[in-house]
Image (cartoon, helix red, strand yellow):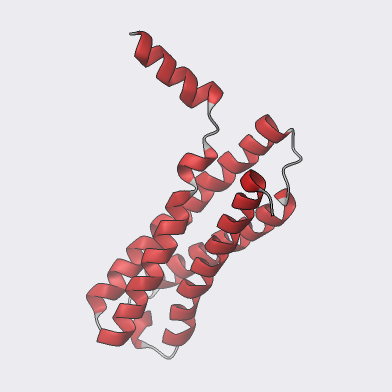
Length: 145
């Protein structure tokens, strides 16, 4: 029982939650970009569907990572973590891009077969690039520049 109590305390009081969740949007946007690249190369609807599933999950992961990041900034850094405002803006942009891509694909399941295919695919790579910049800025908070 002591182990469970220590684990709950560590998860809720000692350790910040954000680092545990932040890897999901990074990995999911990377996987989505990889699958859309394969879908373009192989002209595969199945690979495009895998990319779509990953970008949807990345949108939800971005919400969770963003909220916990703001919470950890307040609790751990008293609201003054380095680059906090830049990270908030970039996280909002990432959320907008991933959510817009997801909604556009959900509303038009054949978007991969239209003239908007290039813009649709570019959104995946933009999402991954944004996630990487956010990851770098998070590393700056922990390790310095």
